Length: 349
Image (cartoon, rainbow, N blue to C red; front, side, top):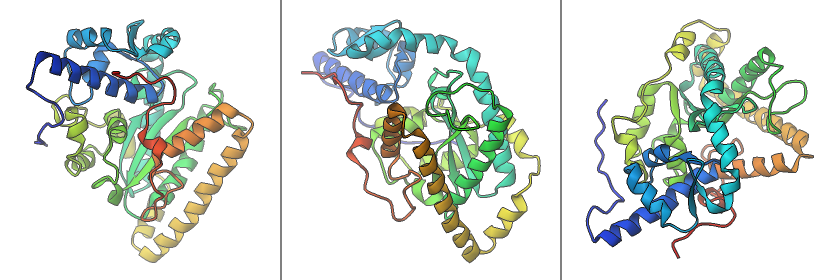
């Protein structure tokens, strides 16, 4: 499908110094976006993810050298106050290719089981460290799910059940403090479940959400995801890359193949889909079950300050799409969702 959207947000004229100043601004914008996700990016990746459109590496490198608060360390673009972490970040980048096949295998299997058993799912995307280039054996596998209106919590709860099967199959996997739960490791992490009415268009149209979507990789439902892009032309103001030929648009053949196998549960969800009142009642019950499960997990993590802080931050930046936001009755978007990571922020002055 061909998408035509006007590129905006970048000045193509003006003086040489004005263009350099604009590039320095875009370097800082890009750095803030990548830094909030907790990693540095190689120069080439930084240029392809560059805010308001990709730029030549040699040009970006020269601008980084003259921009206060930004450094090119161990081949990664990082904040100067995080230079001491660049070595560890670079090591994760180097080891990524050896570890990410596990994430791909787990994700494709899970998505195949989810889609083949639940007709409410429109699309699933892979995100997190598996797409940012720094997947570690301790990481969980992050997914975002797009579903039919009125089924957010049903699909979320079913995903938790299917995720338990994945955990049972990989019970010996080592995890970090976010995934270290009693009895079984957390391997599948459903970041967000978006209902159709929440994404066409998105209620938010900020650069933070745009960057999160830029880092997605389609696993299932590529045609639906194309429709979501068309419904959100504002994305081009932040990242014209969305509408360029190189943007990933194909789903996973492995996930599609797994999805063709009939699974238990499909007839039940099909029955619910034909009975709106019953569907609404099951959705309401599922919401209580999902929120209850999250509170139990929060209680387990309550003695781990790092995990508690991370959970609070993640929930805030997901707003108004977190598990605690009921579609149609979402809470206001908190300031933390629209801000850079706390610390010594780079600036132009």
